[in-house]
Image 1: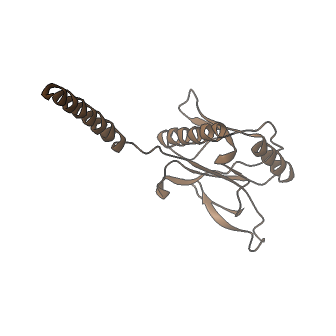
Image 2: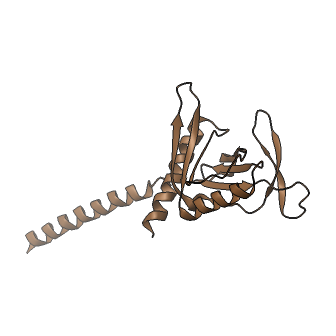
Image 3: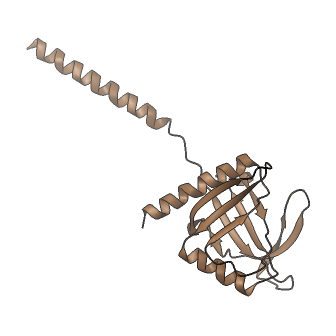
Length: 175
């Protein structure tokens, strides 16, 4: 009888150690960073109550009046990609889902000569976000892909792309 009790205690000890080891790894869970994308359209400066002024670009700030509601968010992103150029510069390519593509096409076709104003946040900290770009709309943008040069460091955009792709993967897996 004593022998069975010892074996049971050894099994109980092994199970306890296994649960403690698993619990310790769960406690060390590193929170996954997220990203936020907001694309706004430039508004008329005289449009009272529909928007506000923001400052884009850090080196040579430009003040632009925007409509408060974004036309595209991270919920519309299928994928994001950092494109490195040979001269050391880089661009950001964002592919949009069908509703994002339609919104981009619609707003760019009726607003030539205005700016798309792009806000990005690459972590849960508010300080890790800012207005990244304000590309001028020359023509209707069909196809659902937006490419622009962001006003951010390579490291910041890597985090931004990683966060956007994580959200896009989560959004496609929930459908």
